[in-house]
Amino acid sequence: MPPPTEPSRVAGVILAAGASRRMGRNKMLLELQGESLVRRAAQRALAAGLSPVVVVIGHEADRLRAELNGLPLELAVNPDYTGPTSGSLHRGLNLLGADVEAVVVMLGDMVRVTVETLAMLVAAARGTDAPLVVSRYGDVTAPPLLFRRALFGELLAWTGEGCGKAVVQAHRREAMYVERPEALLTDVDTPEDFAAVSQHYLAADRPPR
Image 1 (cartoon, rainbow, N blue to C red):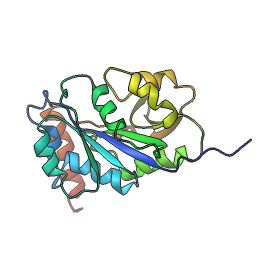
Image 2: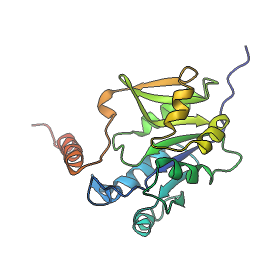
Image 3: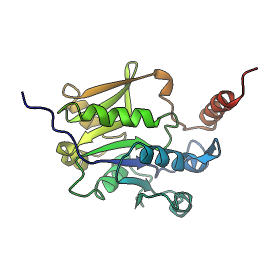
Image 4: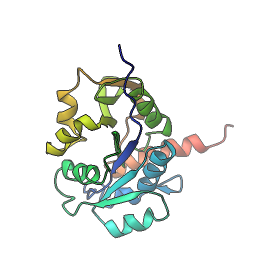
């Protein structure tokens, strides 16, 4: 049996264009431990060695552009940011060069995604020929997700919500799964979500008594 074909260049696409209706303000600009959510996500993607890193922005694009200033990444603007998530994903994928062999797709508001999780996806891809590598939190599959180039066409043809959910479902039997703690499956959609996450990190920062 031939060895798995290793993806030599793995990009990152961060979806951060949404209007944050349930939050009532742009959640990508909320700060956690002194860092905005969008910059936090970008820093982790860069630290994991993803290259290039593309951040897809839309709502308050100028503010997000300023927030990401100085980071070695690319920006894609989705003017139809109130539409389906697929529009943002398509814009991110369209910026990737032909030398990119795989992409990690992540959400800007999944604040507990770590550099370790991203690195685990890339390492898993380098040990398998599976067309995608999926994060699994207990019984739930969710981003970040790694897609090989063989699936880019399907992702670009897909329309809807979620990070290529229909494509993941179609290839679920071929996928490789990376198990992560259920506690890491946290996104921030409402003020209550953000308050809970902030309290978690505040407690983690407190010195032991």
